[in-house]
Image (cartoon, rainbow, N blue to C red; front, side, top):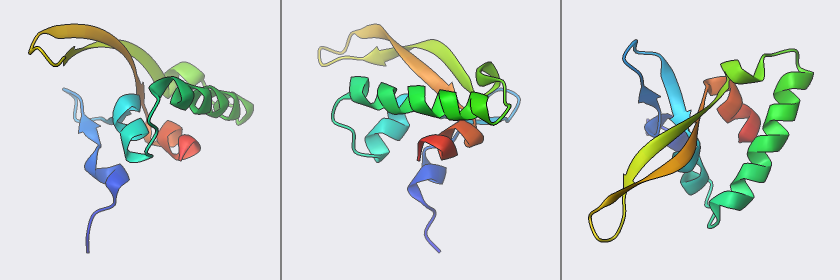
Length: 90
């Protein structure tokens, strides 16, 4: 059975805890503009809080280094998502 796209973009931290990058998830969900995807993330945060969960346990804002066209790197803001946060978004 073919693994679904949500599982293929899963990452593991140093403690083998799973998380998803908001930028990876935006691509899988075919958002051409990451800024528009952030509106969906904000709605998911509200749903998370309304369910009694602590938002910061499921949505962690980080800075990541990414390569740009010239081969240089720059910092971009990304949100690391728990499985629960990813499901709220999807």
